[in-house]
Image (cartoon, rainbow, N blue to C red; front, side):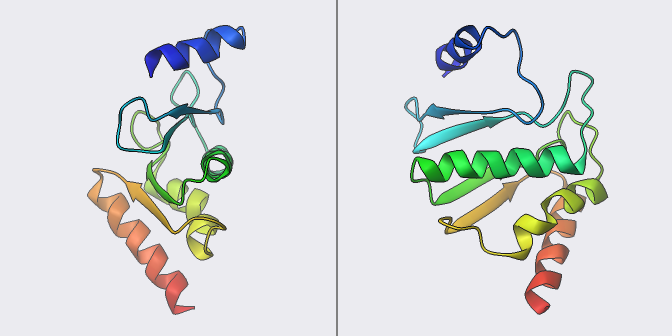
Amino acid sequence: MQTHLHGYLTKNHRKFVEPGTVVVTPSCGSPFAAIAHAVAIDAFYDTNADIIYRTYKFAIAQLTAVKCRNIAAACLGCGYGRCSVDEFIKSVAALIAIPIKDVDTFTFVTTNADLVDSISETIAANVAT
């Protein structure tokens, strides 16, 4: 997988990727059909709702193009990034609000209990309306 990612940088004459970049790799022996490496923070770990939303949309488009129908995704900008829970919810509200074409399941993964609660509340609010 690292070889594939380094190859992407070399092929594109880059030393790093910009926020919003998504690089899809083959499974490389993992149990997944493909893996999307998504970057939603800059070199200073800053991000915003728009960058996060666009990065998810780009990743989803690339994954569905290779026939992935079940997607598990890290909560972009919430690990090393400085994204607040409110900003993250703002960034994914549109993803949560309506079904995603050609995707059966979309699961956010995080160890942040407050973020889990906020995502669950947002989903519940959208289901109720």
